[in-house]
Length: 340
Image 1 (cartoon, rainbow, N blue to C red):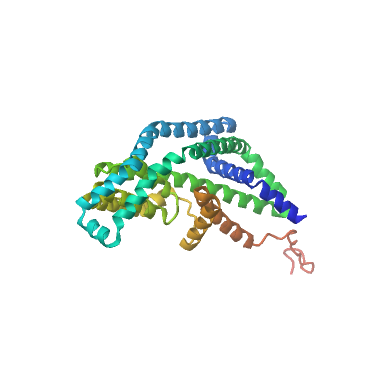
Image 2 (image 1 turned 90 degrees about the horizontal axis):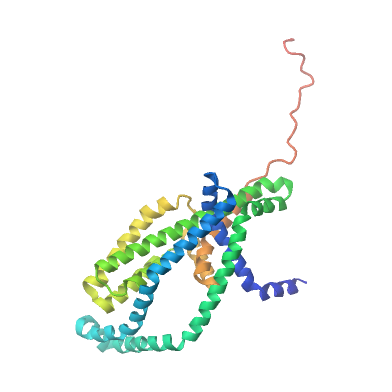
């Protein structure tokens, strides 16, 4: 029986993942909805406002950065081989590395395959886009239902527990919603700031492909611990190839490293007011496991879920109050007050 149940779960794992992502998105948006409810907006209207605002923000971003992003990404794939060919003339260090290790030939071979791979994979890319679009719409509809019904869902989870455990269950549910929601909203805001800062630095240093590189920085900044370093490395490598080692590559790397310190010690403490209180090793392991299971989405979900498990474990260690409070014993031998 257990084997049949596991086989059934495995058969519908794709749908279960979409449901999990939708529930995660709903929990992430719930703090914003509750903020509107506290300001005397009825919950159905608050859900519609947050949904429209989220879709409008996504639409504005796509309309604003979509066309230049596609154009610059295309230029990156077509112009990169030419930039690599010019490196021999512009950089003495690269000439020495190329002569000793054949670095230039290997980079040329890699860059030459980029346009071919892009051209031959357009059909598969279009199919992937349709699949992602269908999954996104499914997640959006499910998240809308979860978000509208969130108070009832929380009460139902609490009612599933025995009477003695309901207060503890309520506290656990509150911890889950608060940690997931605050982490996701704060993390997206910090990622947006990182992308804007990277874009400004790329423009000031006159580095080509500023928009796709800034987008890479914003996306990688979502990955805990190693994401910011990965985005900085990508910007430095592309800047060195396209605009030279000095001042472009060195400048953008220094610029992003300075921003990382400001982010770590100023922005993150202010935005993430509710600390996840997790050791760095646990954060790294959780993000790696999440990325291995669900990619970037899994890496994003893994951190607040791991923090939630820690909070649940701490809550379960707290002893429950006695089921029947002891009745205070009365001294039957004591005489009436005032008698001796």
